[in-house]
Image (cartoon, rainbow, N blue to C red):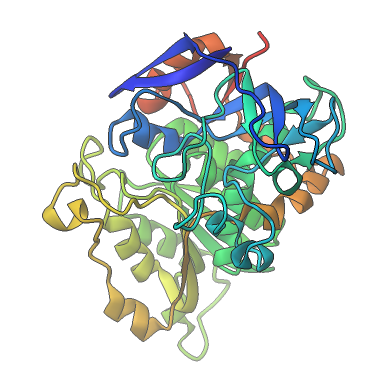
Amino acid sequence: MRGVVLVKERTVEIRDIPDAELIETTDVLMRVTSTAICGTDLHFYDGRMPYYGKLIGHEPLGVAEEVGSSVKSIKKGDRIVVPTHICCGFCPNCTRGYSSSCLTTQPGKAGAAYGYPNQGDYAGAQAELVRIPLADANCLKLPGEPGDQWENDFVLLADIFPTGYHATELAHVGVGDSVATFGAGAVGLMAAYSARLRGASDVYVVDAIPERLKLAEELGAMPINFLSEDPVKQIMELRNKRRLDNAYRDEHVMDGVMCGIDAIGFQARSQSDYNKEDPNWVISSLAELVNPTGRIAVVGVFPPKDPDGIDPNERKGELTVPWGKLFNKGITLGLGRDQDERYNLMLRNMIVDGTAKPSKIVSHRIPLSEAPDAFIKFDKRADGYIKVVLDPTS
């Protein structure tokens, strides 16, 4: 089969590799019809989370080609999507709804994923075939046929749509809330979109890439370019302009937003120089912007260590966090990986009934063979590459 292999820093190749195959009777073999490139893949691609010589990718959609004898809920020919995080469905964390911290799929640790460093020895999903372990717990059955009107929607159920929704869950976004999402990559855009689905009244998206900001606006958010002026100041000024008259009882203390989301993570670009990194400014801005008693969600990736970090603390996986401001404001802070299994059935149904159309953020659908060029453009944020879906069938 063909697959995308990370050969070295900033180099992927399409290689012929041995076919994926069933190992356990609880496995399903998926024939992939769509597989997406994730912003997290760029951490590996850039060498910040090395994973060389491996098949990468963790967002597959396809059809069950072979089914293990112990699998009960899936049959050959079923259309399926699987979550990034591989779960068992029966361990103490899975049964409590924390599937991304499964205790079975990587013994001795919490959590496993396809094609991901330190997340178990599971092959990646940017390939023609993928082995799905513990299939009854991981496969979500889908209606329709490959290539139909839902193809680009359903592939986003593997990661991006549930992760964006997870951000809004961590931030407890509700009807009438104001929300600021930092980062207009696919996760940030899906977080803003999910906030709208949950009834948020004002949604702001902070980024510096014009194509991303334009798409955020098309999704119903107010775009904020952090290179033009301090985003905290911009958002507060916009919120003050929306007031109909003078505030009563000192409501000006609440000029910020009630919910803040970090959808960028440890490779955040600097406010003063986009060519440099500054992983500290986003949490500092959120601490300033989010109102007293507000909520912050952090879903951007932060690795245990970052040897190429810009200062010694970051190399140890530590950040400067304004705990005093967060504490004094009474901020609720939630962070961590997406609990895929909590959301993907609900989100699938929202796609099918027309409530949600996450494929609005898909900028490119291209053959699997064009992955090397796509990674270059995606890494450079060039040519409008926002969310790329690879098609192994073309």
